[in-house]
Image 1 (tube, rainbow, N blue to C red):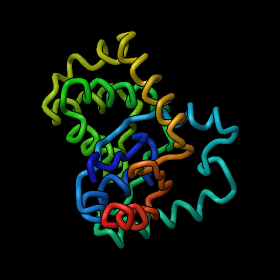
Image 2 (tube, rainbow, N blue to C red):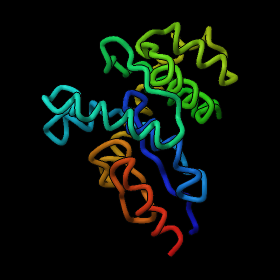
Image 3 (cartoon, rainbow, N blue to C red):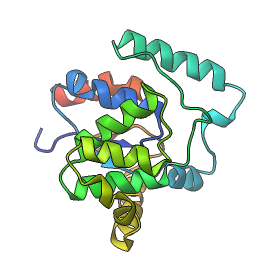
Image 4 (tube, rainbow, N blue to C red):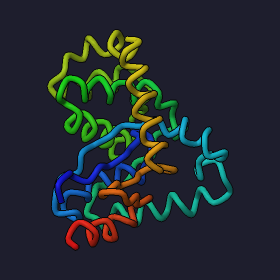
Length: 192
């Protein structure tokens, strides 16, 4: 494989959390992380999240079962989940521009899905930024920068143009695999 696989994610997605945690082991290589705004993907595809459907309880139970099977901490759902994740996704872009994306993503996913923290909170995001080696005091200003906002839009547009219609998605060459449960199929393409 000449280019690493790409993991398209949104920090609000529990399935993206599961994929992020297990992708390196399943794929045999660390994927390149690519933040995209899931709300914009929802708007383009014409329908939103399963979290607002009658099937929510079934999906929540499935995610909790998968997390346990994968050896992750029990999922601790934040009150009112899903939160407005726009600032979190802008913060992810900022972290990427500063070379600290992976540790920032790891901290935010753990804060939200293992500790039940609200990722719409600047305090939560600033603490994760600091833990990831960034200056947490700069977070509020960083996520308000026009170039960070535009960067997130461009990354989301590029993902859509590539064929990403949901999160998480794994790109391996020209193939897109949608869902945490598709990592094994993506791994088969990598090893072929």
